[in-house]
Length: 569
Image (cartoon, rainbow, N blue to C red; front, side, top):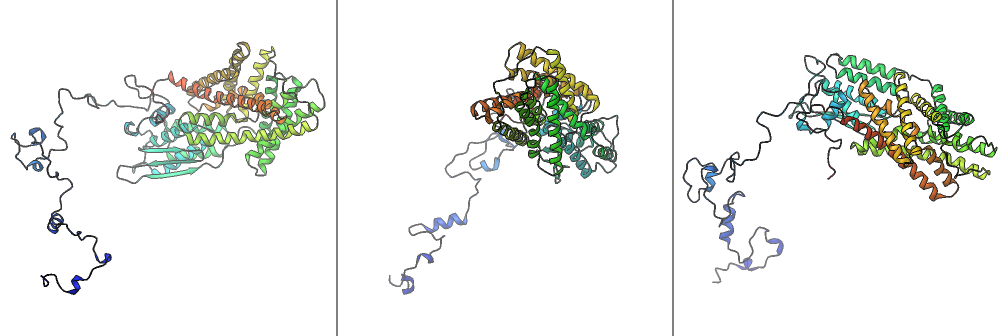
């Protein structure tokens, strides 16, 4: 027994480090462990003790007899075989109908804006194959040049104030017209990118472009829309070289109106707004002079490289200073509140507000947040400029009466003419094409008539009346743009000028300057609600106009897809 136990070295206790992590502990049968290590089982094998049911012919067996025990692994069914519970008589309807999937053609059924917007709102798997409009070279479309041209066109549209969805639709239209399939454009506030995948096995090609400067020029915007319309039309041949040439001409073209004409237009806008609020000829003159001084001061700040925030601060100070000066001189024939409010009408960022809310309603939340943040900064600049002057005027003894609200004068004809003059001046400030100035002027006059009839004659809430009038502006603007195959912005932006909340903004700032913060915040909240009503009304009117248009590619009464790509879950 002593010899079988080994020598003294075997009896020496071993440390814990000497034991292997894979050595079975004492009391475990080594033969069992060895057998498990030597014969590893497959993870797909049936565990021991589990009885398998015999599979019949439906499970893929070649013969009709049931297999014997242990043959379950030899009769594994095919992956394409229907399950045992399948019944051909009670089968669900097939996803693809017997007559095949309907073919959707989007080339000639509607303007390119509606066609491409429909394409963007469709799932990628359901989009039809591109129908090449422009003839490519023998080697196929030049992918890098097409993507570069698309980005340059999108840059001009985004810098001109176009909505993110419309920019994506334009980029999508250009790529499909030149024969590029599987392209996905992406638009944010300052960055444009587009990705093209030649095939399912090729690497995608991605290009991007940054928008660093924005300029309001609706004449250039209309020219870009005409270029896109020609590219997407089969009857017009536009090669890549021709498209680049026309795009270069659009970039080189000077603005249709000079700087001094824009200054006069700013004065005319402020004067017309003051008359719209109950002022007379002298009020018109003083408000126009204040707005022109503010515009020249803003031009001076821009020439020195100051940010746009400080430009708005400088532009808001001269109209407020003239209003305070008139109060100090005790001119009874001039209403300082009308002078200051008229100057605010020329500065309120209505265009950026409408674009920001439109992007948010169509699902582009990042771009919408950036646009609304820009609006907030510009509005704060106006607030700072006016508040500085109002504080100084109160220290000098100016008697600014916050209770002297504007009284609705019985001058409907004068106010309608003033609203149309305001829209006319606003259209010049936006550098619109001369062919669209008359249409937007009439659209603004109709909007003011609707607002006056509801708010002043019908005693309806001003916010509701503003939203209704803005909805009609969006409806008529969208219809006019579809008639001329161009952007809707030239027919909408200037028309909302008479609806901007200039008076609520002024009285809110005056109350804050006088220390009545609660009343001031309430008035500023009204101004914000009115501005949002304008933006939502314009977007709703544009969407309502599309309800009466034919859905591109609709077969069998297909429903129009919503703008948002998900339901928010």
